[in-house]
Length: 507
Image (cartoon, rainbow, N blue to C red):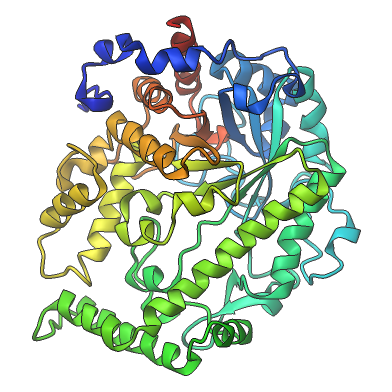
């Protein structure tokens, strides 16, 4: 059984009595359940948000869902999944996972398609081949036009969430797809392709000009070629031969940055050979880490090509922000900061909060603690299969914990079952707040029922209560309940709302 942790290792009751963090939260005043968003400055509010897909409103009714979110979860902001082809933000519960205690109790696996759940207006997509992206599964429904007036009536804000997840069968995707190391087209879009850049700015502009939304939350969880080659994430396998991108647009960008394309391609072929040998347990004479570092020394293009991807990704973020501000200057733009940023020090080094804060009004920082145990284990196992293959995985975990300032967490063989503690939520929230230096808001993403393996940690009401309390006590500007309402148990949603209201009452 998992212990009831609290930030700093305090017993839960003592943690809740500590008024230093709670007073700051309570000073923001009551949740504006019946006050329009425009009547209260965003800076004066603690955003209590939740991510919701179109299917939930279709299955349960718009009025019913909004009332429930407000009453149970103390929610004042809807992050409405408006564009994605992925199941992480859209659709019912993912196949193979138990249904929550609300919504339709049947899978939409055969009918889920994804796309734009609003109505695309053609004039905003003149400069891109990605023109046919309308989601077909809900017929003529325009989810933004449906939810927006009902939410505003309740004083709730609405942000459109857009996610960089595509399908290979969408018209135009093959023309703008990334090219992998072997010259194969993929289902991911090249961020240097002008049509891709035009699509994201066109979509953001369309949503902001066509609807009275309060802003945009942009999701892009893609990693660069180095981390993809190593499998240095929680949600991927080791895929060193499938790294991207080596298309003509990347080649042009490389020349502009003074990077030798042919050297970069050869460098990743060398890296692929190293990884494939490691997976076959063919140890280099000097060991795995030394051989890996030697590759980086002899082939600096490995790092340069990885940074080229990061540059494109950050340019897209900046362009989306600029497009929104041009469309309607008062709107907010936020970016989802993926979970790998939390437990991979290599990735952390490429994602400066101070830099991201100059491109956004808020950052949704993933601090998913329940599924975080399972995800952290996957990361340790992947890096322990290649670069750190000579090191026992338990020692890698302990060393990485020191690098990340994680404090005391479970051992490797218990971590997936135990999950990460509320102290982890507290520390990561503090780190983000320190990193942005007051330049933008920090809204931690709280794990409520994110799917995990059969033996891995499942969110309980106590977990949810403690995580919400930890994030707000750390000084967060609010939070976003994640990943999506259609996979959350109502008891967990109620626990989140109870934590928010308890903190207010203690003021």
